[in-house]
Length: 72
Image (cartoon, rainbow, N blue to C red; front, side, top):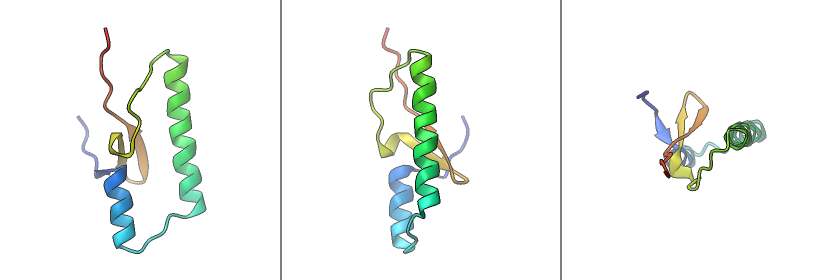
């Protein structure tokens, strides 16, 4: 398993403590990445039923969706 810096909830809290607001470009990039991930999941008929900040990992300003469960 790869190492990630923090989850999105921790990242937001960290940025707030550093008084670093998210730029419009950062927000657009994040939303675009999440929509791309959700579109890929939909095409593969995979449902992620727990999308929340704690399940979005951050590494080097890249975002990854985690916490998939088998529902067989």
